[in-house]
Length: 282
Ligand code: C2E
Ligand code: CA
Ligand code: CA
Ligand code: CA
Image (cartoon, rainbow, N blue to C red; front, side):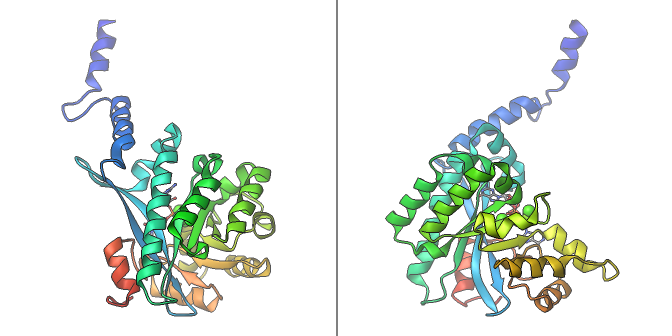
């Protein structure tokens, strides 16, 4: 017993606590993060190959942690999903994204306001208050609903198909755009996507884009996927585009939009505003 106790003691180091305690602490900190002004949205441009400019901005969450510095979603979203904290955090994200979208709608010349994309995870999507929350934010802000885009992944869409269809229909009826995110990574039947889910856009996952476009020897199913999307009435966003070669190839394949470091990384709101106003080039 003594040895076990000693071993147990060893998992504590001087810098921090045991992983479980560390996680509990992070959880409690995340609970307060929004109220403490530590959450921030970065915005990554979605570039229209047709128009040659940014037509969208995807909101990507950052946590400016007082001790740990800037944390990326991968460092806290899984915990937030497991604990359910993603619901209040996600509400903050929606509110902030709608506020920013409305500010851009107000301040930019007509036609220059971007569609602002918000990522929704399974827990948020299952939350019964989601549709009413979105409706209330649109009503109270006066934002043109077509300037809001909601991104859900294939696995979220496939989780409970009848429930998903109903929620998506209600969101669609409000006029918001819907995107199926990370397309190509799930195991869902792609035939479902357009027709059943009333999606407007399909976002090809970045790993997928790189894997299929970097190796010219690799027989690629990418053209087939893009054609499929078009056949079912969906427009295609390719994410994770990092090179000029990928960018050009996607253009040739008839992909409508690209997103990735080749165009622009996720930017703080101020930088995104400058970019939209044409004060910094894309
Ligand atoms: P995602 O929705 O697939 O977002 C794309 C991720 O790829 C972002 O990572 C973005 O910074 C990164 N990225 C952009 N361009 C490139 C590129 O050219 N190459 C590479 N390798 N990566 C690129 P980030 O910001 O770390 O977000 C990771 C994930 O966290 C997101 O994946 C999304 O699933 C989730 N997430 C982010 N913000 C939120 C949020 O507000 N709510 C929820 N529920 N999830 C969020
Ligand atoms: Ca996304
Ligand atoms: Ca994605
Ligand atoms: Ca992804």
